[in-house]
Image (cartoon, rainbow, N blue to C red):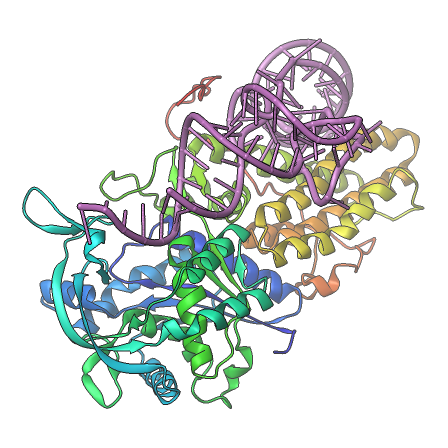
Length: 525
RNA sequence: GGGCCCGUAGCUCAGUUGGUCAGAGCGAGCCGCUCAUAACGGUUUGGUCGCAGGUUCAAGUCCUGCCGGGCCUACCA
């Protein structure tokens, strides 16, 4: 709709899971987007939440001797706790157990039904409770214990026959392909887009969208023996938030979403089923779905059975919040799988943050504090030595914005750090400590250029590291209203009093031994 | 079986539509500086651009085959 609005969502997380780096990563990417867009003057809506329905939850609640709602109230808390722990800034945290969500699901269902794209049939097949999915017989195999399991997931399956409502997905193949073609940005990255198109071209089968084997979910209108398929329920949260079906609701202005951020495992639900549901109901599909990759841990796949899951909160505790956020966004080209290595984490923390950025701030600010009376020094005439640095800093906003619009977070950070690198080189080349004796006015001017450059890169780094950058901006005496991108070109005013500088990015301190790390720590693995 | 992606310096990766494309960062060695969080800067580090062919005046950059890694999907059953 209005290009001044920006609506971004995380998937809603299944409460039966324990939060891990996958959840944290998806939400972090959204948080960076949301913060950037807010700073860039957009009217942002950033939504995250939890998916609380389904047979697994029903069973888990029963096992715990609890009512499902009470149970989900409890287990969803760990996801809500992640918000402050990771510094996320969602505008709302939605839960599928909210009454308004039931209303939205049922309204969407009725629309699709009225359009003739939902019909009652019968489903028979091998069903896995754990996977919440039906499998073709060929997708299962009988193990030595005589139990049949899904080949892909290893989950036990049972033969189930039940009446079921179906979504007429088979009728949407051509319209979906047309939609993909007309909206080349809809699926990202490109490789995922290729996969989805290839999948849809391979033919689509009607989709079972209701279950009668359990109760914990949204009842099908006028046929409460049926509970809606979890994905029909879950995906709808994105429009529930906007007030659906009330298209006069205050939040409806945010729809269609600008970006659904998802992990690569749930691309299909978001790029095939979801736009088909919406188009069937006469609702505009979202503008873009970005499927990011997975993390491995020191080169190994992460799995619960291996016990090598990564607890992001523990990372924050050891390395710091902004350091962790920076690493996750910087280390890997967004969209690719990434490998978490402690050595790399420490490397980033020390080289990029402490040495390059933190030390730049510290060295410049301490010269200013000692030589310029603790105030922003006087700007003098610009020379050819100053212009390349200042020009690059000035151009960085547009460059970073371009990267952010493509979710190229690592490239956005690279762009910022190029300026930081140039600034460090500029310090050495200009040697303000030498100028102190020969040309104090020039010295002041050089320091002004540096402070101005630090201000700009720090403004741009805010979405990634909100806490640390706020502290640096405090040290630059940049007022709150000077921290949005609207103020990007508002230069530092000479004479402004500055507080005493303080280090913001410490180097990593090994809590164990003071012994230096072995030099060739990672030769082979 | 079909499809998609990838394999470039020790490590992580950039390399548009073929012709300074053989690069960056990190690590390591050497040198310099001293404002700073022993931080910063300069410089070096000599990679058959997975392998083998082909197209072209010219190919990491296009084509074919092969090897290796990842992913989507199908089926044999």
